[in-house]
Picture 1 (cartoon, rainbow, N blue to C red):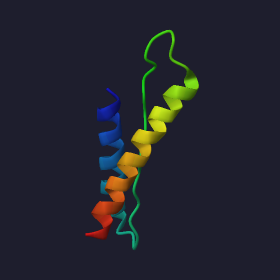
Picture 2 (tube, rainbow, N blue to C red):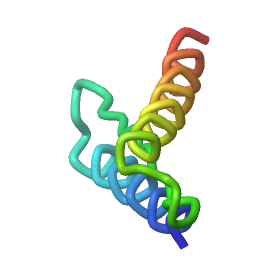
Picture 3 (cartoon, helix red, strand yellow):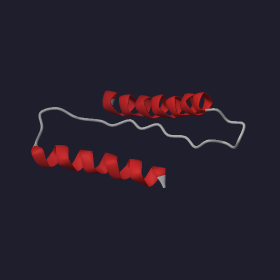
Picture 4 (cartoon, rainbow, N blue to C red):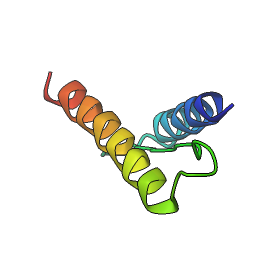
Length: 66
């Protein structure tokens, strides 16, 4: 499941940053998408994945501004 993999990557990075006591924060934004059938194109799939990536990225930025 892509969402579980993304969560695992986020958690691993967060835990590693805490354990290393880094003076800065690292964040990870991941966008992914599945092809939607035979008539879907790679370009359209990448566009949808990019939209998800930037939606997630904006969520990270809102969290950091608080």
